[in-house]
Image (cartoon, rainbow, N blue to C red; front, side):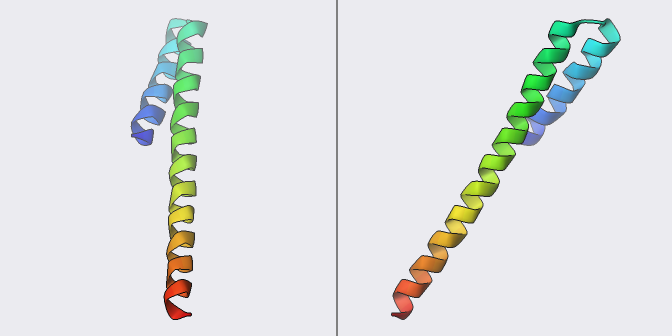
Length: 62
């Protein structure tokens, strides 16, 4: 879903620029930032899952 947040955020930023609406532009910036944060969280979860799998593998070997 983060890609959707990023795309809609960029669209709102562009619409805010075209309409000269700073409120809409700020809303778009916040939505795009939310998408970026979700991506960052997903990457961190993937790294944690990989580390957990490594630990489980080491546990089985010892």
